[in-house]
Image (cartoon, rainbow, N blue to C red):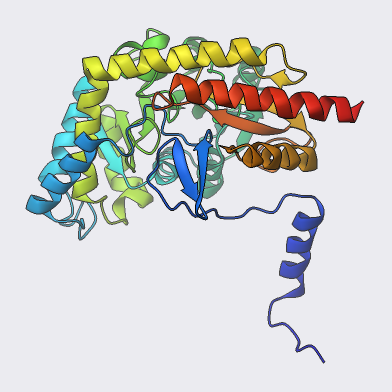
Length: 398
């Protein structure tokens, strides 16, 4: 007789439902550094699913900077920033970021998720509502839930829809959007949303996790693309785990907002600071992003994007309208997306299928991400493999 499980029935039922709908998530262990040529279970793959857009995660300058910083300041922060965990590498990174982006202050957070939770939960409450894009990252939505603030979501990148919600609100609050949308790759209409926030007296916040480093002049992201400054975009969140190639996040803002967040952003107040070694590596990454080498990497990435879109345009699939490193191919059905991902893996291409609830039901996709670290040969292999797999899949479907 099989022993009874100690796991509650509702947990087992939820897992079984995920299995039946082909929505189970699993962790994959890499046996190699975060590079385009990846080893997984002793097999070699060319990966097209990392957010390491500039190929800096394994860059020798970052590795050296991390080692050099650790040799002086150690590995652990030891405490929160407000107790004794704010070390010289943290301060140097904050000042360099503020100067680069043109803000009065920058505050470091351990992760992008925590930065968004901290800012929104501190600035919003039951009397200060949050209005967000329908496709915003989960951390932005969760920040509003943590604040117990009224939350309304406008149609994706639809300024008129956002205006209707702001106009209906009985009090001003916080207007929030991603800069580059992580699952679609398109860019929000930031200038128009900023004007809207100013018109109605709302605070305006942008999470540019996927834009900073690889878009705009000197890699300053959507802020640069839209010709905006700190006055028009008073609260900017960025992360280091994408184009920067390290880990952690920051909020760029004014002195007054920074002082307020220092008092009331609980994920900042009650969390140990990021590793000073990571801060040192991130400062080296910022310097590289600002350099001629960084510009060359952005130009190479742009060439990869253009080539990829030109090749995939003729295939029998829906390629989403994106000019960023995120190039999603919508498949629709989750099971079909998983099957195509497996076919690509058999050809040496690692590209994870993204399924609900990460994306809307019926829009499962291959979220292909390109990197400056990819070679031209890598791109040719990817496109040839996609052509082979997608053409066969389309013929079988008919």
